[in-house]
Amino acid sequence: MTQDNPFGQVLVALVTPMTADGEVDWPGVEKHIDDVIGAGADGIVVTGTTGETSTLTDPEKIRLVEVGKDVAAGRAKIITGGGSNETAHAIELYKHSEQAGADGIMIVTPYYNKPTQAGILTHFRLVADATDLPVILYDIPGRTGVPIRYETILRLAKHPNILAIKDAKGDFSEVSRVLNQTDLMYFSGDDANVLPHLAIGATGLIGVTANIAPAPYRTIIDAVNRGDLTTATAEHRRLEPLVRAVMTHVPGTVAAKYILHGLGRIGSPRVRLPLVGPEEWEAALIEDEIDHVQGIPGADFHRFRPDRNAAAGGALPKVAGTTR
Image 1 (tube, rainbow, N blue to C red):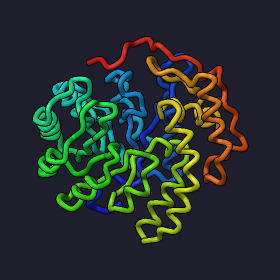
Image 2: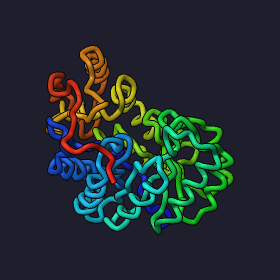
Image 3: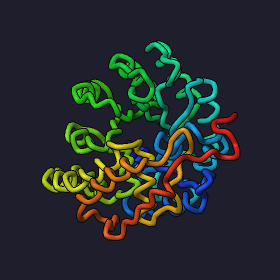
Image 4: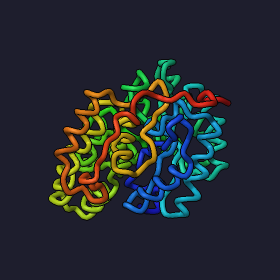
């Protein structure tokens, strides 16, 4: 991480540990943040997609920033993700996050509304105008319904607060084109494509699988930084079955919590509805993939004890989600 990069390079898209009844497990949050920082993460994205932002209340989101800052104690940057598909609400959330001590914000493309590119441009600009924090744009059309088009990215890159983009679109030719024509930093938002993104000039990653194994990503980043593609490739290949287990059978949040609980790293694999734990056949697929994982630092799968019953279903918390 250099002075020009205020975010870090190994960023964990943090799961939000919850109790069996769906309430945020605050001691579990503290432990998990400390674990991933200790294993090599230099950035934590709280309240992102993986953190179940859609079903967190606004006070929970702000407290996650506060807890993250307290636990990190300067060892890693705390980035707040999520936002809102209502521009005014997003501005309010990010202002409160800044007051809570966030080091940066990640703004997702407005979802469900399906705005035009002019609407996307206006949304990002107004949110970026409302904060002094550095901004990461989050381009994930598979979830939002609309991409941030190349021309829009070029225009947004001129905003002084917009410094980076998280790419979950997988268009490598566009990544190269934007890197050639802007000063934006790129963060890989697709766990399977971290090394390919880095190989064409990306700055780092914002990863789901990094909840389970940050150390290999630290190895990949450090190897790429020193031009050691052989080491980076070997670690990429070692991670492949774990990435497949996390990212291919159920939503990444669900699989990551299932695996973390099976490793004894979080107290419950519970997710909030409408997410539910893996069904029997989905759990079996995840476990089959895990059988191929070998030699991952910090993840001893000899002690993996998955609990399908504990993961089954989803929780209805006492307070309804995303409230003002």
